[in-house]
Amino acid sequence: MKPEQKQRLFNAKENIKAAQLLAHSHFYDIAISRAYYAMLYVAEALLLEQTTAIPTQNETVNGLFTEQFSDKRPLFQPYGTYLNDGLKARLRADYSHTDKATLVDAKQHINRAKAFLDLAKHYLTTELVTAEPAEVGANRLG
Image 1 (cartoon, rainbow, N blue to C red):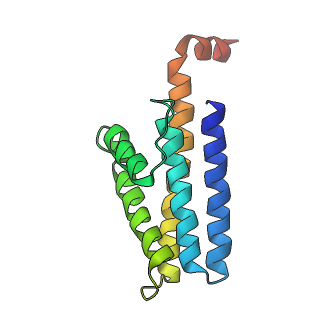
Image 2: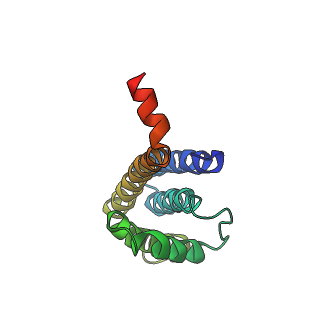
């Protein structure tokens, strides 16, 4: 795994922890925002498998993730939707003064972020192993 990927996964983990603390303290809108950014960092980590240049706009990252992962790999299919739903919820949480998030909303986005992070860790580890089968086999035999 590349250092840039590790850093993004670490950032995702920190944002999930922050989201959990915020939700526990009844700051549901801010928790949703942190959960979305956790998912964004996970998407960026996965995209770094395919490119070295990550777009700076959230919508562009979401679209690229959907194109490169959700549409091509069944395992990732729901996560493109989660990412896009997360962005909509983040924008609503950050800018709406009337439509306030609930604990149920916050938990949903936090749980999606946790699942996305777990999937990415597994995927990136598996991709690394399958990229070097001779070395892995030699290490297992020795």
